[in-house]
Length: 242
Image 1 (tube, rainbow, N blue to C red):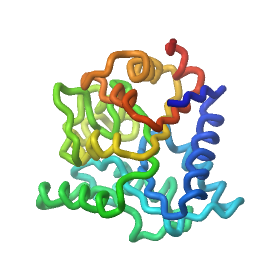
Image 2: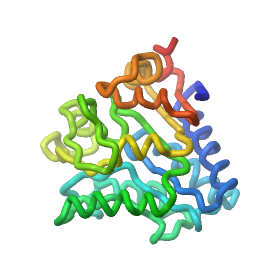
Image 3: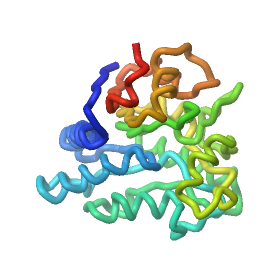
Image 4: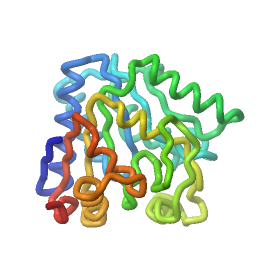
């Protein structure tokens, strides 16, 4: 486990992008796990700059998203499909057939979940996972619970997560209550994880992730078990660490 504490969000994003780019240069066919939300936006912006200025090549990169809201069409302004394309993938030279994002609209949930795991398996699993953390310690909508799912599953969002995500919607009633989420098992099987967090509002979650006991009440604490974890924090998010 390697910790990097930065002065601010911009530096955190720059370093996270440089770390990700290093893996892509080493393996042009990298399988890259993508997260959403506010935290990785800067990282994606820095990766776009590397593509534009240094010709970082995404033409053979394969991506898998952590999650998608159930009930939102791909073109919905708050769908994670739209987020991922608008904020990152449409601005680099990735091949559309290499992009995998769970659907928000579907008929057969068992088939959708099975197919997503199968596609990951056929791709050889995640090589590098860019990963943020929720204020309650959730990773990829794997919420605190007595039991956690190893595989892709239907996740019910907690009240805290719904409240935290309401800022992206017109009102809290619009926030979907369920999502398709990659399982904790798939996340932990990633060969390398780049964990990013910023801001004082994430400080408690970061503390519980790395200084607390390993418990399903804080799913991110399971990252303590990962052999190849790079943790990149701004100083506000790191302020409660020992």
